[in-house]
Length: 298
Length: 224
Image (tube, rainbow over all chains, first blue to last red; front, side, top):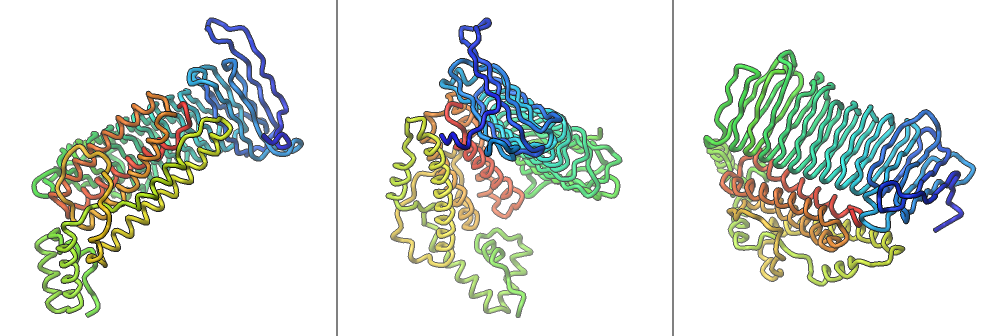
């Protein structure tokens, strides 16, 4: 470890009495002055972590973790405001890495890269960039970071703000988006649901998970929905200016949005439908192997 | 004559994947165009001579042995970070090798069919649930490239399997089985309707999601 590059302005790791658990715990408090747009990497083996954007040009990590867990940070030159930082919270055992709670405070404009194992992760107040990665826990992001990448294997990804750019991936977890302009969401078997906001560009794809698109559609938007066997449910305002191109290989298309009926697909298998509302300036493409595609007014 | 038939059209024609109208137009063109007729003849001969070839070609066996040796887990904590970086570099290198191998395969299949007789038999491919029919040459070549990437990432994941939490391994394996089933279903349908572009795109997307899942699984931290 290069101690010359290591700076801890505030460090306190102290054992405290166990509360109601058999495991002794210790407090963590790490901090450093930074620029308002600091880039921060944190790997945290912990049970729960919150990230909070605040109006100070500094980073602070605080909370309680099991005894034996190591927490440390690296921030470059000691007397300068850090432009980049690395922090880690490392547990000696798998079990201890699933316990404890941490709060990370960062400048609102920070770019945060955060990776954990089974922690539930919640972020609010950050307007910079977020790159969040968790295996078994959930990810919840409030407010509207400029860029957001969120990946989880098992847990859900929920975004309540309206990021300009968002990419979300899961294996089995659900992806719930309540806003966003440029959206990419991919899952194997989770649900993808978008509601709210005005989407300019989106690609939502699943293998068996259902896809529900109920967001507003911006003028000239391009939306792609694709699944192997999940259902695709498209809810649009009848006043939308959208052209919809839907096709299935063996699945059914159920159109309750316009009066046009779908026609049979190639070799009389599957269905196709090309219909529009308003002047059709935006375009939605829906492709499904055997899932049902449903168009409904909202 | 300047507007020659595209390579894709000629391949579709050789595979019998053109619509009747497109086939009629192409054959009319070839009656008047010696160059296209010659290319069509070469592609037809190629399709005939490659019909009995394996669908994938393995890299040299000693290459995998070397990679496997480098991927052997090390137990000291201080060396784990270096090992993890090595894995990433090796996986990247292996993917590059796989892609290069697939590109070479495609090139050989298209241009040098008579030289394939001496190439080693293929390694076993990723598990596929539904037995499917043979794909046309163009789609088979694309699938080869995907299968090579899957194989490389699967090996990297196998090496790391013991360092991951059992629940994570279960989630990944369950999702891979779902992806495999979807690939097999799409593949089976594509073998029956090879000219269906929407189906081909769904088939490719199923592979891409599986590869992305494998890539993410190989990047998980130990004990997660």
